[in-house]
Length: 91
Length: 209
Ligand SMILES: [Zn+2]
Image 1 (cartoon, each protein chain N blue to C red):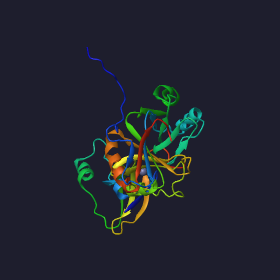
Image 2 (image 1 turned 90 degrees about the vertical axis):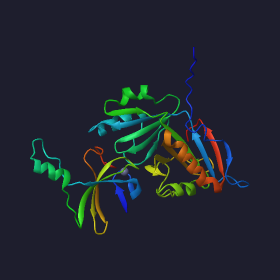
Image 3 (image 1 turned 90 degrees about the horizontal axis):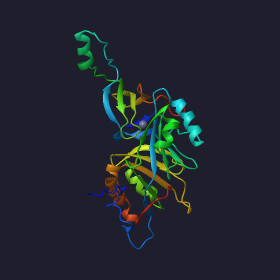
Image 4 (image 1 turned 180 degrees about the vertical axis):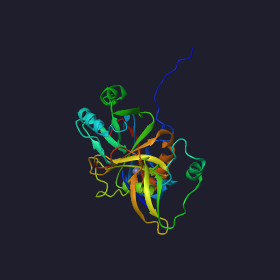
């Protein structure tokens, strides 16, 4: 698998580290126990398109949000995750 | 009373043995040169201040700082992209050090002196691309990686910043590499192993390539 980093270009998988599902959003303070349990423990096991975080530690050290098909490993989009640089390449 | 002498020493001081290495009786296919005594400052834009940093950098260096994986070869410094909204200022002779850059850039950016935290290695010669191909997954063909191209990447699982400098006077490509000081010796041995079959000419220099 190769990932096209929006800052570095296409790189081999060994330069990246997988974090996990990019969908869960941290609940607001005062959220119910069920909401927190859901955020911390519950994950969908999707056969198809997933959104996940990858870290380009062997390259630009930016966090990326990758849309990947778990059946084919086809990657349809790679974007900088929030905070990973204020501007994009060429901007 | 003990006399201390604070003499900066290269992390490669023990590993680097000048002269010929590897295959003998042929012209060395690879030149490995450690460049010593440089000033290296990492400049990272504060959040939302990338445009302001770009302006300040242009005013300071006379050229635009890289906003893509590139090394900008200015007259008295090389500005090397190290990631989104950040770059290295590589120079020599005290022209661009923390005391001189902080007043110019610390508004929109955080600065960090890396002069003794990285080792700078220059790789050139007829087989330079061949040995780098053993260690890197970057396409270093002249059309894909021209003069001024740069990459933050990994070699032998070690983070490096790699860029192509100006060609040697004999027209051969020059690749420059910054590696964290603590990983330099390990990567140096790996490079020597990769290059041994082509014959290696090992040296160190005070000159930036
Ligand atoms: Zn990257």
